[in-house]
Image 1 (spheres, rainbow, N blue to C red):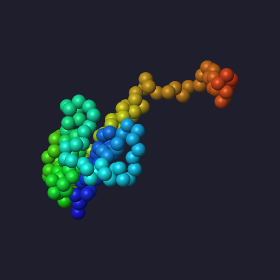
Image 2 (image 1 turned 60 degrees about the horizontal axis):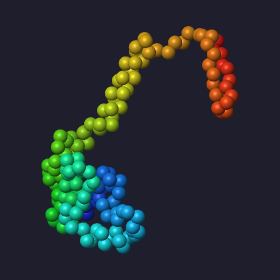
Image 3 (image 1 turned 30 degrees about the vertical axis):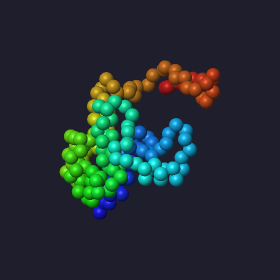
Image 4 (image 1 turned 90 degrees about the vertical axis):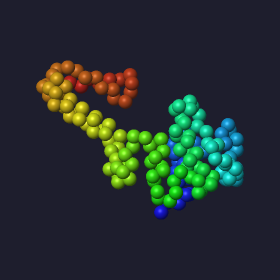
Length: 156
């Protein structure tokens, strides 16, 4: 069973994925340690998480971070294992929640890889793109580690 702390940690991770920093980092070269981080967390008020950028670009992400990082655990976006409110958030528009929960949601990375593989196979089947295996007398010049010295290699 997921606890409210789990969803809070997801909010921290989401913020970090978007910004590359902790929502509690002090920035601007200020000294930060465990005590100052703890003080930042305990002083946090709902809605204080801000993402830099145009509201149109960061508004949805900022809203999700604030909803997950709500200081009152009973008012966080998700309660327990009920993901209904999470997937109803605008951040997940266009995402098929059922396939995501089932683990069958297609990875955009794999879809890109499949497309690249199909293109590579098509090129390999194209006679115009094939490398000739016929012998030739052209010389190839290979660098042998020293940028100023080259070795002639003849293909027979």
